[in-house]
Image 1 (cartoon, rainbow, N blue to C red):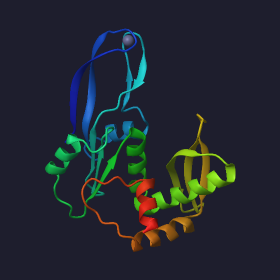
Image 2: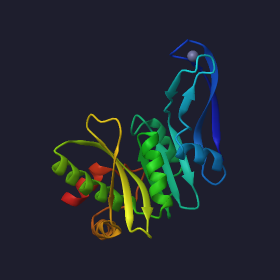
Image 3: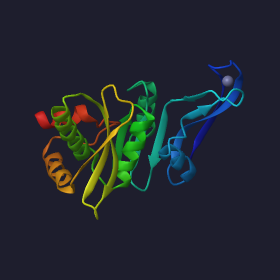
Image 4: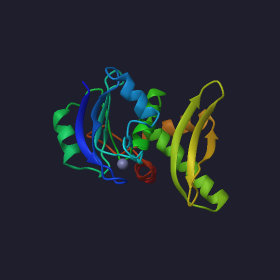
Length: 210
Ligand SMILES: [Zn+2]
């Protein structure tokens, strides 16, 4: 069941107060439209009807994909009361993957990873390796890396990478065998499904160091 709430927001541009919809819960199969909007990055996009001021409006949202057994909690401020409450409402773990993400971009990436049938722990390991390689090759820092696409036909996993100080991403790819290798590594490390977990680069690093 989708849960949409309406709130009055005052525009930072012109001060006009308008009603705005906020999707605090999305069910992927019941709300295909909201899933689409999340994937095309318009769900958290806000535009003032009076002055057309535009902004990203980020708020906590629980994304549920029952078919894939996926429950993702978007919580911009991290492990807040809202995450604890989501945990209490969905205490079960049987066949469920629970993830915590901090931004709409991370939510989109997580959904794309699972919809591609990939293991996100292994994928974060690939991202970590790719990021380290890029940093040493280009002598720069990588701020963020996002999974973009997978093609079995082209033997390709694609990522977008934001280098420090650059607004536009660069695109990098690896062959699927790199992922397969990480998948085997992910199976050997001590990772267990529990509550809403932050499966990110930091976790991949910790698991690999162990
Ligand atoms: Zn306005």
